[in-house]
Image (spheres, rainbow, N blue to C red):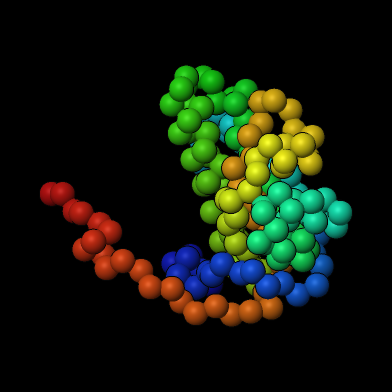
Length: 172
């Protein structure tokens, strides 16, 4: 598939088949995460690949129980900011650059997942303190996203997009 086709066809998937993800694909997802661009190449990010059913259920509960699909996905990736690396750029590094680092990695992961026939969804509404506790994260890590990943059991409609002239301003 061409990259623009992948970008346009990827959808948020909240229903997954209970089919395991091959190890080769898991390794490619890891590669997609670590090769994303980052501010100053500081790579102020850390990811957790959660396969353990009990932990996935706890993560689902930390997401206010409204996302029980988290527990049903074969894999949940938790993306964290690593403040240890982010401090090089001061407050902007901590509050903006490090979050962008995690976001760009997650975009890579989601696009690669789609190209491999997998579905995913970005989950940002969760109790961060609970996730820190569940994963026993060190104080320099802050979870900012959970990405359930698996083979889709649904095919959502294409959502509308803003017209180009409302989303983009061209300055010449």
